Image 1 (cartoon, rainbow, N blue to C red):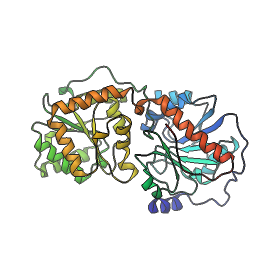
Image 2: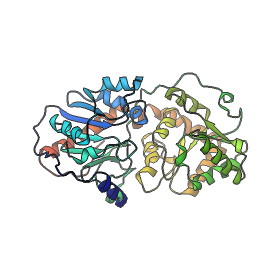
Image 3: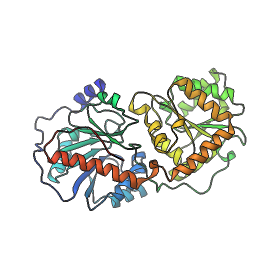
Image 4: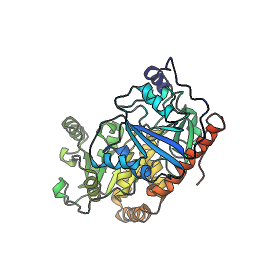
Length: 400
């Protein structure tokens, strides 16, 4: 939080002429505005599209303010249609965007970027809306006095860790992460040979970005490969340098370089389909899989994770809890390694876990967009009513 506060103060200093929010008129429909650079084929859009489409229009008026690339792909068109109003604000200054929020009488502005790449958090420093929320894109505190709330759950921000957040914590039941249950999985599953995988042998998989791979976790993965004869580790192919580095590090740990197999990027439905060829997803730490964890679980691939103290190291635990598989969450590196090894060497146990995931996938809360919508809307209503009463923001838990 100290780092975030220092960064926020440097990047988003208080403007000399801040907008005066003051009392706002009460609206028949609460006016939401989602702001992002990622309203195109991006992980945030893949998770949120169904929510934008399904918001209760009798209770909410929903605006999208886009300051990112003007992509013309199918996701961009889907999002344009999902909002009541979609505005490209790339040509406006931060203050002008805040003025647009103010003039549009937006009740709640939701920042989907935080301090991630291509963000414009400084828009919120001008206080264009009476309630301003940090959600989804930045898994941590922004340390900014102009962000009132962070949307979380009991897994990612338990009560004992709330002191490390400058925002007031609003906890949703189950998981904070929205999912689009309309995400399509290609019907055809390629063969192992087509993707460079051995015809036989256990496939450990981790499709996280390569930068998330830290030495301690990589050490565990290499020990697993040495323990499980004929196994391979299937990773995302980010760039040639990373491939060379990781293969070199595998050899330094006594593992042949060709036991690391790299998967090039694919369109989403094909990417989801190839998960069927893996046996177990092994998570990274301290930055967990986020959207990649949802992808794996949606495709029916079990995931083992290690849970830490920070938001980014607790996301996969949140997702596993919401899909009814808390037994796949480890609390220590040793337990993480032991659990992954047990699943890789006990076929009956792994088959039981896979069957449980398949049963829960469409019944558990994680992929129930309708249930999630009701809950996040309840959070927005509570924020709005508190603001209308002139009360300061306060944390709360949304009831199931």
